[in-house]
Length: 251
Image (cartoon, rainbow, N blue to C red; front, side, top):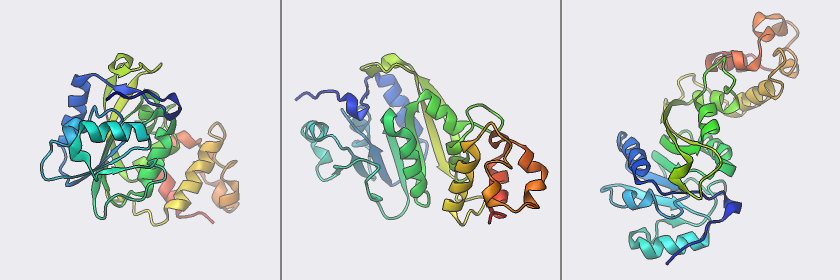
């Protein structure tokens, strides 16, 4: 049985076995019992995952044709595939779980916001992204790539950029390079109690990233607060700790 590639779903299937094995090795470096694979597609990673002993595997795939192919090719997946978009899926497990995937480029940032929604239970993420998205997630303060996801992910996870992946590792080759990153849950080190409040603050700050913070953040702070030196800085100059500290003073 064969399958077709669907550009509408951002499908680029990983074909390089060396890269597959490198991703699986990165996964095995962590302990886990429950694992969710996002977008298994043609099974490049799945064929390794189903061989792992003593784990509970679930796969989320929206493409009916790929599901038929996976079930025919890997019968062990019977009852383990959730036919939905990851963006619409409920949390697949109770208790801690790990996420792995060659994430569709067209929704990869949205997938990270989904991971943030599940942040209390996600132990690790091993994910392949478009290289520039991976670099944004892993970026630190004071860099051009540092942005909303850098801050929000960094508030809850340790981020490691593991390696680049060349375009030719895929069929069809995408127009850009890819990057694999690992997230490790830090268990809320800054004691963020109101994630939605932090989200509002960070989005507002980066919405006008070229301006001093006193401009975009004016609605959220008193006139006295806005006189502090930190509000003369720009969004990319603040660390995660700075944002958490500001959040605690918001109206």
